[in-house]
Length: 82
Image 1 (cartoon, one colour):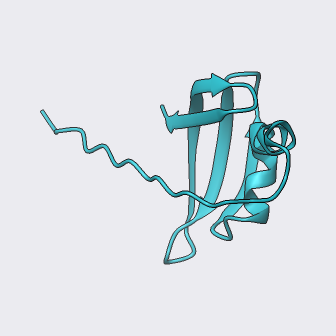
Image 2 (image 1 turned 90 degrees about the vertical axis):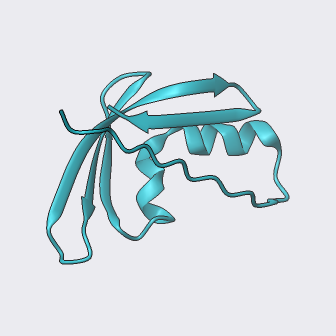
């Protein structure tokens, strides 16, 4: 049986904007291709799920679904692939 490999990415940046404005921007995952150049598109399915389309290093298209795992309005949002 193959083992599951989990990778966690975390980064902090300070942005001089109200927390709720930033939270709303990040919560609309369709914005992410604007700051993540490898992403072609993120399609929001519903309040918790989305479909991501990206290009690999070899220009192959990669697609997966993700689910929001943490959602604290004005404070934090996190998601993971399903």
